[in-house]
Image (cartoon, rainbow, N blue to C red):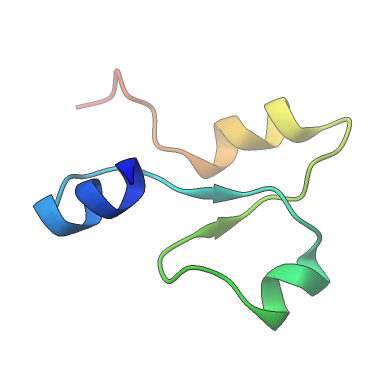
Length: 55
């Protein structure tokens, strides 16, 4: 419900899909960012999302 409300409202957000690349390629939500869960997830997350403190 929360995701649908954000989509309907046009809110800016990032949707991270942590499933495998294969699962993502098979089917995913439009605009989702593929970042498979693993030991480097947090480190890689920083490179995928923009720096919220940057102007």
